[in-house]
Length: 391
Image 1 (spheres, rainbow, N blue to C red):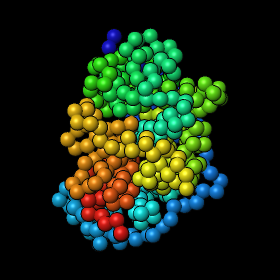
Image 2: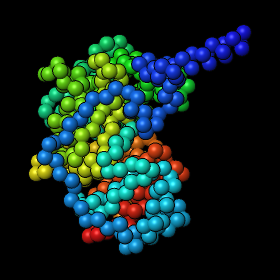
Image 3: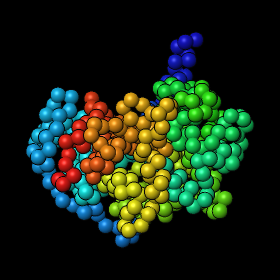
Image 4: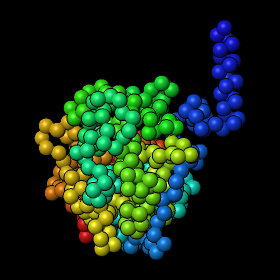
């Protein structure tokens, strides 16, 4: 009997692999076998257009900056370009950009990636979503004080229906969330679902909303569903991809188009917890946008108050305040010595980072196919700690 079951599963797996089935949950589990930076190629997506007249960020390239700004990470002294190259290349890095005072100081690519290559940013998508929410709130379409059931239909659980959107934005929802890619756990069900809108209405709670911080991925999916529904109230054809293009990507001057991965091709919704795919230089531009208080090209794109609230530590005793930093509105804060304003960053799987140090007027982007053996937040903070704004 056991042999028969094993044979049947082997045949099923083979059949799914042969057909390349990615239109069902089980098919995705079998054929994709866990997230990777190229899996967006196997899934449906929508384009995010950039402006036709977009121009590159100003440059002041200085590949030798390490000699003037030697830094130490985990006992390793990095004081020359070849040392930085070796560390980055040997730890899965595919793109690395340093922007100081709004100018690109260094830009490197590895393992076949180039300036125009697409990079899946994973949870950096959450910080993009946060910016979109802030814009939509300023337009009166949605608010952090809104209940979930004001925008998300089909919610039967009273706690979920009555939860204010401020909680999922701070990852204080209290959702039950099991990591690991066994098919019955929340992480793969969230990542591979073909019906995000229905899936979020079934979220279960482990803690009362607002009482405990958990870095889970259901909350940004729920926020994305709520935001889409809010946009559709005034425009039934609205999509999060179009809204990203019109309110963020084009106004901030993104150099290249991007794309959002969808849960399914027909009538799908954007995977707001992990699905944005773009060029590294445009992630750097997004970091610069938040460094500049939401302004770019002479206009306020993301409300300044939203940017400030996103990158300022919450009050003492808040569950999203930690010894080393904080989490607010789908951004992370990093406490560093001697700062007048805290560093902050957008954080993605496989070591994807947009790291911003306001006191140093510095933005650093790291993209990779895996995280290697580096704590990338600590690594980028080590650079920021020794950087001088005049550089």
